[in-house]
Image 1 (spheres, one colour):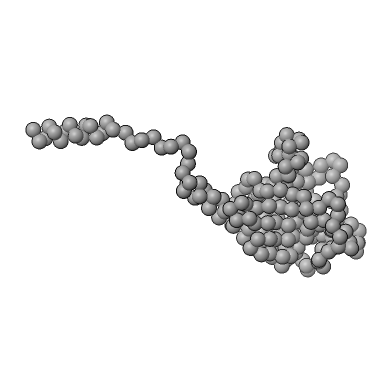
Image 2: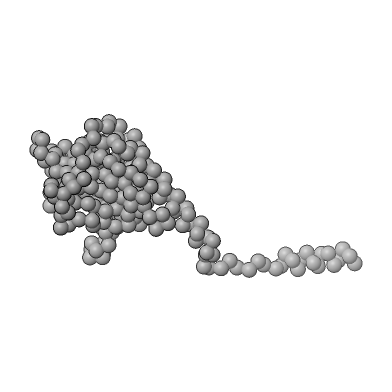
Length: 206
């Protein structure tokens, strides 16, 4: 009889099912995902900071028709000039003709902890005053170990597709800055991180 009761109990327990997991993730699970994203951003931030203080020459890779900032003949330099836990500044220097430099542009990255990364563009006149079109940019919306895409909301909403920037950083190899429409590059410059050059003077205004 004892064996019969034991068998019945085993059958009854096997027939029971655990309650279905809730469809809404718990607060703890959300916090864990946020921490994972924050750690991923921290890693990308460390890649951007790796060459801080150094400068590198680059080249134009892609420019869509009508994009006249560069024609491919200019000398271009990126300077990993200033790095902190929350802000990284990369001035972009363009030699328009021999000895004549445009030092108006600085790419500025911000790290907001769990709120992610942000890219802004600081544009200055030679006297240091801000240009009319300055401080535009947006937040990182996706990325991998070595890259991030930063969306520009006004243009994305207007065009009905992703409009913004893609940044790639492979330490000791390549740094890439570019603009994108959907999945297509509309402008792209690559910098050779294997050959440092003499750091240029500060960008205008600094």
